[in-house]
Image (tube, rainbow, N blue to C red):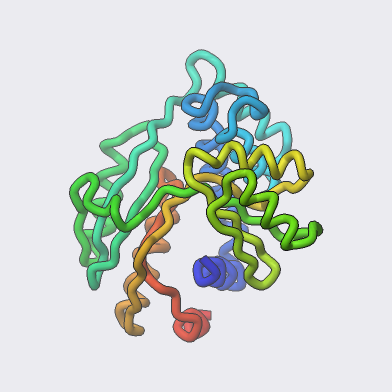
Length: 248
């Protein structure tokens, strides 16, 4: 995860952050919409997925009225109907990809995804072929934790957390899918707002790439993340700080 954050920082240094801001907001609005329709309605207090989506939007400085409009639109009749769909694929050098999408046109989405892998020397996999490699978990990311760390860890474990890690001041709480809501509620009771939270796919086994293969992988990753229908991209590549620095 830290390596992926490094890549985002590099893109920011290249001046790409402003250009990507609109895409980030678009993905957040889609998640708000899907959360309303599939997670339990327009009330964040009764819908853990929507509550997480709202927190993530606020962490990205999305205006409050934009968030409220997106929720209202999703709850109304005739709003955009985004479908969730996931694709499993293999990139160059056998890199495994799990791609979560939210789309109003499945034909367009699969056509685009397939074209990216064809261009960069990969191929689509069968549904379920990578389920064993990517476990579905709840993840909460917290910066600048003010609570004493040992006490915080005990509170999280009591609420159902599987793991609590602190790396360079960034605390990551991992939960089983079924315990996501209870941990989220505990954080709310403790008056702690995560910088990011939600269900993610955690890779159980990573692989290293040489420089040439890593550069090809990064090009494919960037194209995938830039697609408007793609919400999240997961992979099994172990990030190499030295290679990332070369890209900077």
